[in-house]
Image 1 (cartoon, rainbow, N blue to C red):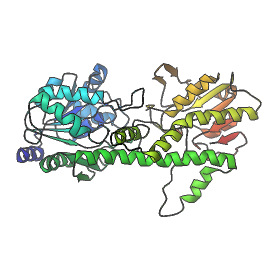
Image 2: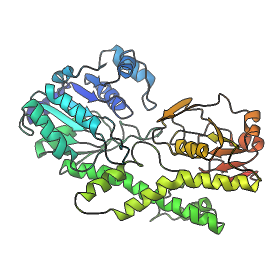
Image 3: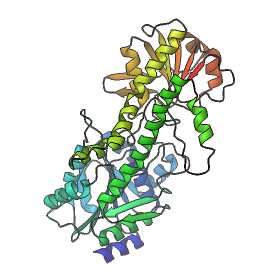
Image 4: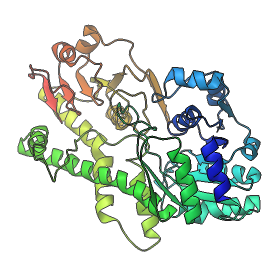
Length: 437
């Protein structure tokens, strides 16, 4: 089986399946198709499938012309029909792994996808999970489900591995194609073949590890590292405010050291699918071993509290101008979870808005990237234009995303007062009405 698959990879006769056509799956499917491998994308959402088949892109990191070209050439198609799994030789699972209302891992998307795959899995297929999850998922959950549903045996009839997604929306340098990849699979043959499949498509180095659990833990480490360091600077931001010290200036000074320091920055909280969620996966799994990840849990508590803290600071800013938060007009600038993207998953700005509303503020927002959002019971639309009148009418302008296509000099000149939680207006010279987190 190994030699047959390696030959098919070399000859580009492998047919690829990608399950989940979101921020991870669609860019991966596009790269596979561009590399010369006929690709089928699977998704349960009819609208996504329809858009892909029409060559209409909905993901920022995918080039519109690339998608249209490979769709028109027949190299990429999309479907909601999982029976086409029987036609593919390589399957990448790229579905969401959110948290439930109790902040515990919700792997229902993974489980449901694997059950559907198992019904049509054929001999000689590679299956790879890319969705971020807790260590042990591939071997403890996916392997038994695939074997039971297909009556095939892992390692003999099909290969199974884990290769964590590394997608950073809006990153101008590192995309799916040139970001190094980690592969951990069940058995050395599986590892070799799955790594060869990625190497044939991607420009980044493919690094192999000894097991799926190592690869799963590696992904958790990547994002927990960032969570902890952001938690550190967020806590220091609270302390520096009490001490009358600019943490932003402190960080700028610290990062002049050419070794032993990496700059992280405070803000209204953590957003996106990975950094706010992954540590919960690890702390949840750790409890199975009677182990408490105290440092990780402490950073999570700090970061989770930042939206409320930022509103507390906003209240103090308004108090300086003899205004109460109740009844004040607050204009929030930016609801995307990071600058210059349209992704608002887990955005702390949305939690900031919720807390402001709970405090009785009249809230509007402007985001040139996110025209509207719906998060649980909260749905809002961006004001169409950032005008002098809009800025002047607000009792407080609160910057919660550092979009580079916003004129912060214009904001400062026309706003009554600005509370900048991202240091986005750092280059504005007149700072009389600007307060920074």
